[in-house]
Length: 295
Image (cartoon, rainbow, N blue to C red; front, side, top):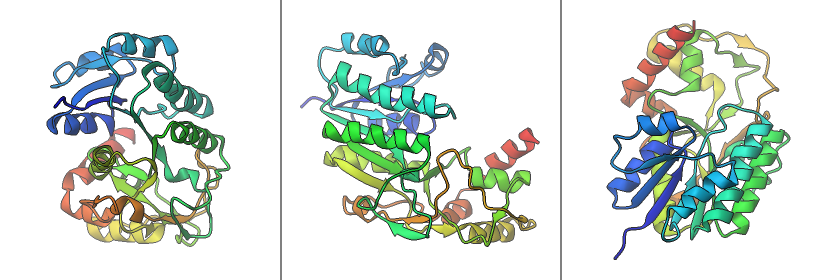
């Protein structure tokens, strides 16, 4: 029996460990990254990594020409590079369109975001909840989701990603940028990078299609997060401040439910952000270093 062929688009914070995980599981993996320099830097991986601009149809076409058959799975987890609507249009919407047109994979998975849920009342949201984001970036994510779903694909709505070397909350806490907004009651939804990887693997193995929320088991209120961090690291509690209504993907306040993903058999290794901080000192160490470097 032939090995499943998987194209991982974007070998970054999520894509690279996903590609490694799939290769270790016996898949025939090809990784794509935007620049030649990054691809060259990943030449030591156990699977090939090529440079490709997914926003360019000809660039994706070159990948198609190099293949003798279709990919079983394409996972689009490339980053917008912290760009705004124009970058979202190119990388996500046009990128997925080119992948579908040029490669015609048997299954396509798009890593979207829970920011498509614009609820502000702290209510629980499931995959059936209204997803009508106010921000242009969120609307482009929804448009990309609809394109992928129209082709029988899968949209994974990821909560805020954190993990080795990356945690916005911890970085802000250590740098002194953290602010408890208003009464601190706004809900925060997160997912550890390794648990997001396993969610992707589970979806691939099950051939699951449709929309899945990828969030840990327990949303946390902002004040509770910073109170925990202050106690755990024996540092002052961040000051109170105004609510930030100008987030790039729009302001929201909701509790993201993960029951549909759990029904596939997925279970997060880190049920909450608290557990990850307590069990993996490396997350905090990296955040401290980043905060010191940026100060």
